[in-house]
Amino acid sequence: MTSDAPITQDVLTIPRKAPEGDRKNLVGLTREQLREALIAAGTPEKQARMRSGQVWQWIYHWGVRDFDAMTNLAKAYRALLAENFVIEIPEVIRRLVSEDGTRKYLVRIAGGHEVEVVYIPEEGRGTLCISSQVGCTLTCSFCHTGTQKLVRNLTSAEVVGQIMVARDDLEEWPVPGAPKDETRLLSNIVLMGMGEPLYNFENVRDAMKIAMDPEGISLSRRRITLSTSGVVPEIARTAEEIGCLLAISFHATTDEVRDVLVPINKRFNIETLVAALRDYPRLTNSERITFEYVMLDGVNDTDEDARRLLKLIEGIPAKINLIPFNEWPGSPYRRSSNNRIRAFANIIYQAGYASPIRKTRGDDIMAACGQLKSDTERQRKSKRQIEEEAGLR
Ligand code: SAH
Ligand code: SF4
Image (cartoon, rainbow, N blue to C red; front, side, top):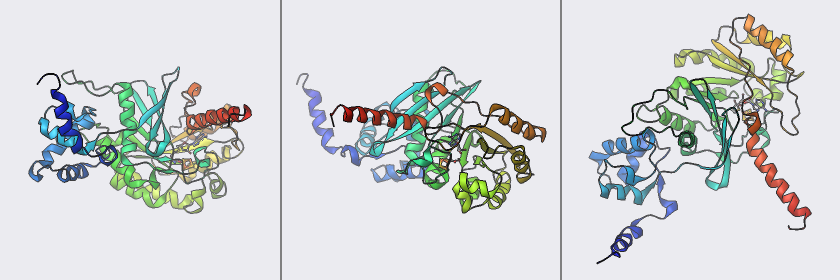
């Protein structure tokens, strides 16, 4: 036999491989689910815990996507894994880097849907903003995502996969043998992209558990912030089952205004919401809740509003994050003036709260919620329009 030999091997392995679509993705499985999957594929039960621990480390600690690179596993076992499984994360289809270092990825997930992921570098740390749904079923009147129809919930693989996409791009997986680097480019996660994370509770929880696992990506629960519009029944559950920090899209100080801005308020009003929030820091034994407050000109931005806000949250360990409204084409609101935002911030600051005004980062790449995606859609639409006008369609 000469150089034809490898073909024999191909003939042996290829027919045993499950078709592409039938192979299960290992990304996004909890430790227990991973163990069960390995057993189902023929791993002896006695070995399953050890094997799943090894595979877990390869995937989440070393960032390996190829079973052949899992060198502490026997060759035959690696082949078994490759026959039954894939290690798959979303595909980056567009990547933009802003002058200020902000990176924005548009990633494609199964079904051809697209979601966005934004990385914001800061002094000594970096925050990744990830999405939990394609679109959103809620219809907050100032939010562009709210105007898109919900297509679907992201799977846990797609949620944790966004973190893996960013680690790939930042080249932040550890290098075997290299000294351990404690400073992290990607040190914090915020669930503030598209979608309402508490309407996709289990997948978000499983993905965050994976991100927090000490034998993997290993982010502390205090470096993960989940933002919700106020799905009250899931708030205590978030404390118990995830334990991360909480941000709340508060945005208004009367039910009348909040009913319009954040319509879920009609189901869970300010009083009910605040009551649920009061318990959160105790349940998670953690610091402060972030109150997000988007500054809308003439809608929610008076001194009176600032004082009402303080009254409402009295006694809750809180940080108030003022967000200058990001206008989008056709948005029914305007951003409050800088003077107005400063005056509002000052009242809050005087009362002893930290009240950072969120900087608009990555403006040149449209890093705001929902905007890259809609920009791509706009580009497509205008291409179609151009084609129509040219008589090509
Ligand atoms: N659905 C969740 C998380 C995603 S939105 C939630 O509503 O909390 C993340 C934050 O961005 C929320 O506080 C949301 O109210 C805010 N936001 C949405 N659209 C915005 C816009 N156009 N300008 C400024 N903030 C916006
Ligand atoms: Fe959905 Fe949050 Fe936008 Fe409201 S603000 S529509 S909950 S993504």
